[in-house]
Image 1 (cartoon, rainbow, N blue to C red):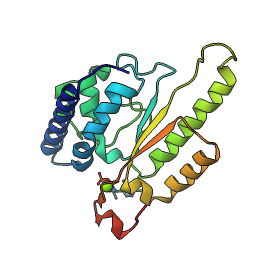
Image 2: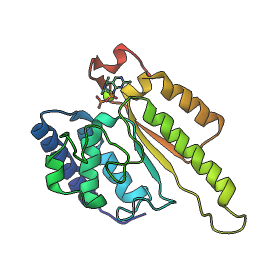
Image 3: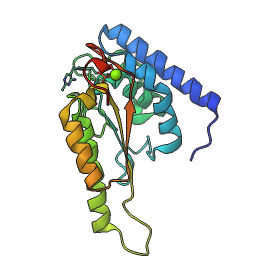
Image 4: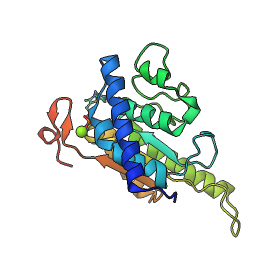
Length: 206
Ligand SMILES: Cc1ncc(C[n+]2csc(CCOP(=O)(O)OP(=O)(O)O)c2C)c(N)n1
Ligand SMILES: [Mg+2]
C-alpha cells in the first residue's frame, strides 16, 4: 500500500472535482454529481489500493477497474490526467465530449488507454466486471502453478450507481458472481439516492 497522507488525498480529490466541474461547464454537457460525490473514494482507491501502473496500462496482471456509470466519465479523465495515464493533457480535458476527443462522453475502450470496457448503458458495466472476474479466475486456473508465485491474481473493481442497480442485468450478473464466489470482485455502490428522474427511492430501495 502506497504511503500518502490524508492531506494529499484531499488535495487530489478536490483537484479532480474542480477539473471535472470545469470540463462539464465548458462542454455544457455531462453529469457533475458522481464526479463530485465519488472523488474521495476514487482517489483513495487509485492511490492506495488498486494495483495499476499508469505508465503501463496494458500490464497483464493489473487490477481491472470498471466505471459502470459511464455518464460519470469526467471523473475518469480527471483521474487519468492527474495520474499521467497515456499523457492525457489539460487541453484534451478541455475537449471533453467533442467529436474525435479521447475524452468521449462515456469512457470508450480503444479510444482512451486505461479504459477497460466501454460503458454507458447502465447495468452493463457490472455484468462486464463480473465477466472480467470470471476471466481472471479461468486464467489463474490455467496459468498458475502450485507452489510458485501466481502469474495471474488480479482484482476487479467496479463503481456503480443507483441507475446500474435499477437495471435487471446487474442483478443477474451479481447472482452469477455469488454462485461462483468471485471473492476478488469488488463492487462499490455510490448510493446517493439521486438519478436523472429524481430520487432513486421512487423506483427502488436496494
Ligand atoms: C440502460 C440505460 N437507461 C438510461 C440511461 C440514461 N441515464 C444516464 S445517467 C442516468 C441516471 C443515473 O443515475 P445514477 O446511476 O444514480 O447516477 P448519479 O446520477 O447518481 O450520478 C440515466 C437514467 C442509461 N445510460 N442507460
Ligand atoms: Mg445516483
